[in-house]
Image (cartoon, rainbow, N blue to C red):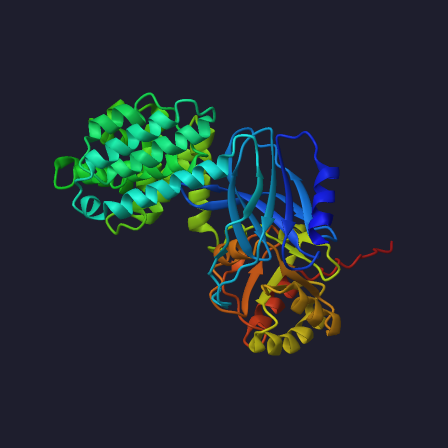
Length: 472
């Protein structure tokens, strides 16, 4: 019966769009939302591009309109599913449940392979799965050679075989995928770096949205500054970052290397961004100085791709420092209405991250009630559930008597990462412009009321000047 409903839904819902995804979720309830996001593979930052609600049959139809072939990730019931889509294609996909051991580890991501029923005319997912299987077999069968870095001939033969089989492959994305996975294999051997430059870097247009290109590029140029170690250029490199904080000066130092000289200006900036990202964990370099260099690059760069990568790096580093803007996130009210944290701009906001299974969280709410009664005109309280079960959230909110805002977070794993939620309850105090006032604000049972009182006092209406009537 379920399959019949699914097929009927598919046949009546196909339209002509860039990418049409028709999905069937094999578990859960129709109260759930499907979130779709793309990933920046330089920083592994996720950007939500679409959200759609399941219908009564746990089906959905989604039109993405991406200009090029890309890897997309779907999040349903806090489970992640990743596959590839190409323009002007239709995909029919089933999303099975997560069967792993249940866990309350806050940062854990549950990942499941989707079932691709219709893979588009080019069968992109089927082809890439077959290719990845052949790569795994190659590595397994020649493990000792790869460990000794003597697998050049094996990789060369594999490369020739793949190129022979794919001479008629029409998808540029698939050809690029094969090309740069093989490049990563060659990086594990003693294959000439100059030959790799000639084949994989020089005159190759950067493909920022392609996961395998980015992996190769980052691996190839990883630790680029090691070429300057124990040389006179080492001090110049450190000075360019720590003292001058000048991206042009830094590029001039890096540009003394024979490999970087062969790169385009955009590739050079990508290398520089990659190095600055790695330098952040190196005690030799000042973190504030690195951020200063990146902020200048964000303004000066002529390449939107580079600007986007720099923006993601800065957001990742400075996300929750006091004074920074709180990361955006969505949550659903008990009635199903979607809200965003930015909807509360203009107000002071006290966010309480909690879950129905967290006894200390529930106990704190009894004190939150008194705070809300006293300060609700000055501070908006939001209790945001990180429950994986919508049913448990609905059951709790249906019985509660609290009258402040309750919601259940969407894109839960990103929220935990963005707000660094390692333990709950966790509280964050925000200002009216969306800025973080207290990253780790006090609990209601502690001294948060002092902060509330200061806000109330600072925003109390000032007494009007007495009008003095002078009788003459």
